Image 1: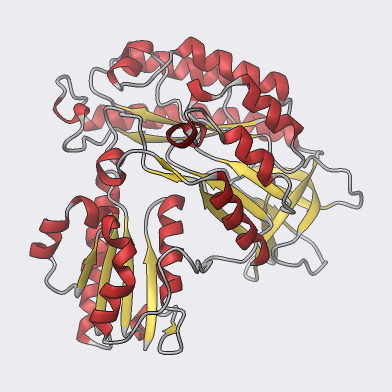
Image 2 (image 1 turned 90 degrees about the horizontal axis):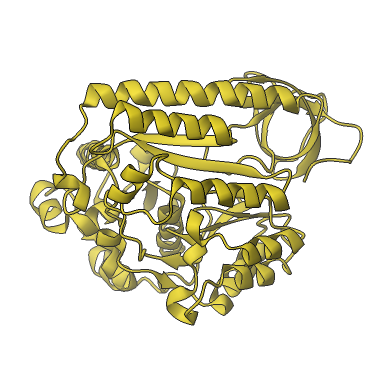
Length: 437
């Protein structure tokens, strides 16, 4: 039976998808990329914000229409199902099986019953990488103990559940054996890692162990600002493989709104943490996420956020307009911001960030960086790669490389930056091996 998969949402959800895909590693099934040729399809959904929920619904409806042709079985899993299980059963009769996150351990049994075929693999024991073999995510915990006023993740995933250092190292070794060269450490809040298990923040202990493994790059994502302690930075600075890459969602640049968001710390704390990072890592890449249009936002509080962005000069910035999520504190807050105002402020924020990136990219011209080659575009006769400054999630931009050499996909090469276009860099293969990371 030909089976296809669709993974929606974040990198953490992708790890779930890879564990689900591994269940079908069986002679009875054949992986098929052309979804219209599939006899079974699994959709792993996201349910975090309105746009993600709309994407989940649209995808389910589109794939359900394939049942008029070859498709026999449609399975839907993930955050959207976890959050709206009863509604899913009522609204999508075309779906043969809905599996919420809480039932993932039972997936082999549920699938065996659906297909009348015994699934022999246990969930989470035989992960199969889907995008490539050289980069992967290591999810070190699930759930979240933070209760940000706008966020539905704790409602969907529950409280933080850290996986032990031993289990995480074992998983990392397995990924290394599969050929992974770039390890991206993820969680809802990586800096909180271990607090539920060990009664202390244990990320520094984990990365010390991971740094002993033979990865080329180790990148840490989703770091909560007030939990970035100096001893963590000291440990990172002593590691050979951990990149000076800091993904720190600050969400806003005004203390009044941060308090309404139920975020710990202050704007001053954010500035101090970033200054401390730059003290230890002169080549640090600092990425952030911001929310525009949170209830009670005014032109003045928005201006504070703009000023903070201009002062800190983030290397990468993603922004969202506020999405009111039911069952969160922010859902029923008064002084909601008009959608038109949200969008205008979003555009103004991203324009300011674009100007910063343009200045930063000019400064990179003439410098040589190590680049991980990800693919070749025959139409433009160029390779596309990433430096240490870009995570694999498509947010940070890439580097376009023109060369007469045949480059190996998944390998690292020295690239000298010769120009840029918007958020992306342009480069050429360098003769020397002296690079930044």
